[in-house]
Image (cartoon, rainbow, N blue to C red; front, side, top):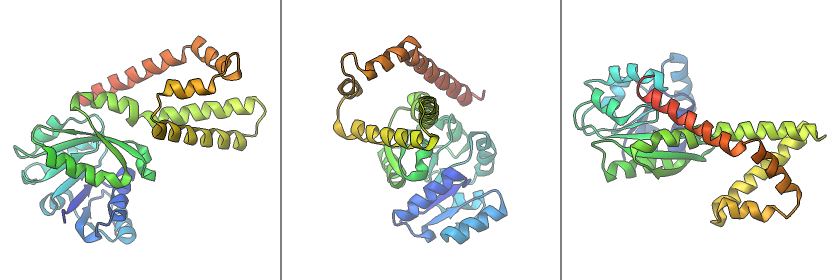
Length: 267
C-alpha cells in the first residue's frame, strides 16, 4: 500500500490523518511530522503512527501531504529541498501557495497537486478542490482523490480557479457561521431564547442544504416554493434586497478572491 506522510500536523493534518485511518489504512503505512515534541508524543499515543522529521518523511513516504500554514510553507520547502525524490507525489493543502512555487523548490519533474479544502474536514464533510501542477497526471489526481475521500467530497478545477475556490468554499463556512450568528440575534430580537433560536436555525440550514444537494433543483426553484404571494418570506426577501445583501455577498467574495491572489504573489 502507498505510504503517506502528513507534514506539519495541526487541526487539518490531524483530520486527514484520522480520516486515512478510518478508511482502513494501517498506522504503519503513515508517518507524520510535528513541530513540538509534546505534540508528536500525543499523536503517537492517540493514533499509533510514527513521528519523524520532515527530511526523513520525504525519504520514506510515497505521498507527502503538506498541511502547514501558508506562512510556514517557505521554511518547510527549505527543509525539503534536495531530499524529495522526483517520483514522490506532493500534495499541498496550503491556501494561496501555487504548484509552481512548490515545484521550484523540489527536484525537477516532481508531481505536485494543490488542494483547497475547508473546515468541515473536521466532521468528514469537506469540499476539496484539487488542481494538477505541471508534472501531475491523471494517476496523481486519482490518488489525491482517494486520500481525501474519507473526509468529504472532491472536485477538480484548473489551478487558475483556485483563488475563486478559496473565496467561495475555502472561506465559505465562515460566511455561513456569520449568517447563523445574525439570524440567532434576530431570533432573540423577536423574543426567542438564544438556544431555541440556535436550534431552529441549525436544523433549518441542515435540512435546506440536504434538499439543495439531493433534489437536483435550482436554488431559485426551492426558494420560490417557500415564497408565497404577499407572504412573510417575500417581505423578508424584499428587505434583504433593499439592503443590498446580494450585492454585498458578491463584493465580499471578490474581496476574498483578491486577497487570495495577494497571498499567492507573496503579499
